[in-house]
Amino acid sequence: MPSPRAHDPADAEARPHVVVLVGGAPVRAPLPVAVDDADVVIAADGGAAHAEALGFDIDLLVGDLDSITPADHERLTAAGVRVERSPTDKDATDLELALEAAHRHAPARCTLIGGAGGRLDHLLGNVHVFADPRHAALRLVAVMPPAVVHVIHDHDRIVVHPGETLSLLATHGDAHGVTLRGARWPLHGETLPAGSSRGISNLADGAALEISVERGTLVLVRPDPAGSSAAGVGQ
Image 1 (cartoon, rainbow, N blue to C red):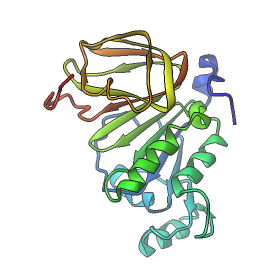
Image 2 (image 1 turned 90 degrees about the vertical axis):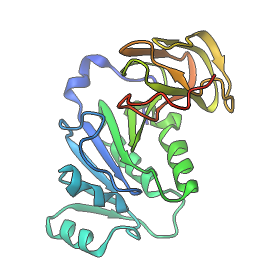
Image 3 (image 1 turned 60 degrees about the vertical axis):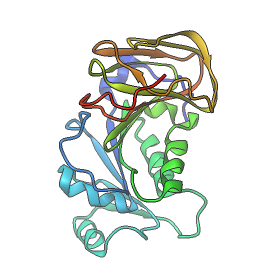
Image 4 (image 1 turned 135 degrees about the vertical axis):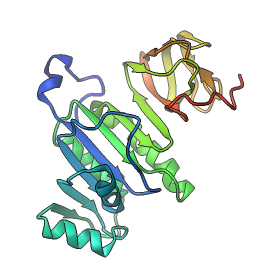
């Protein structure tokens, strides 16, 4: 897989936008992020159930197919959708298999949709998987209604609503050289330890955040991306 920082903005327009659909609670349009320009849609098993509500045509179905409904499976098969079926006894989740498939397209960015609700172990496992540094080249954003999660391995500029609640967390180890601008409580080249609650419940000061990390991985969690409530803020 590419190096976590091996992305070239100059050729981003030539590379596809891959959408990965993941099982979990139902997802309905409109989404808080733009997906109209999706070039490739990959469904991770039961994530195929989101396709019709969101207006997606699935290009690839992956997983052990223990979660997809018989009706969805029959419909996709009849439509000629490519299927990569895995044994039930496997060492990777369906999401992980879908992300591995996404890498094959060398996307400019990847939007994950779903994965929230249901079992807590699945939710925690999903976040650990998609924030893993080996997936850094995907430039991944996860839409897990109502929240949106941005994974940051180097730097990003994220459009937000003034007053919006946000939480910045280090994952897969401490994050070093963290800079956060555009928030009430900024950071200036600091270390954000994994397991620390320091980054919980910040507030957007303006219409955009500037986030960078010199070493490590960050997840920015926006529990209310519509910016309709700043309830629960406390630092």
